[in-house]
Length: 83
Image (tube, rainbow, N blue to C red):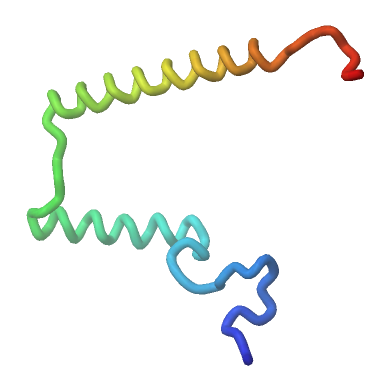
């Protein structure tokens, strides 16, 4: 049975948004954003919403860094030989 993916390596499709060049993806997304603003359905952050989003992002980033530090210190067993 023939497949639409003939010639592609790794079984990835050459169709769809994700397979596009990143610049083309940005252009399409930008068009959608402009259309939403023109239609009046785009979300616009208030300064309070933006402040809260920034605070949450900062907290998540610092938590990720703490977890990374913990896993690094726990992964070094020292000693040298595995026998």
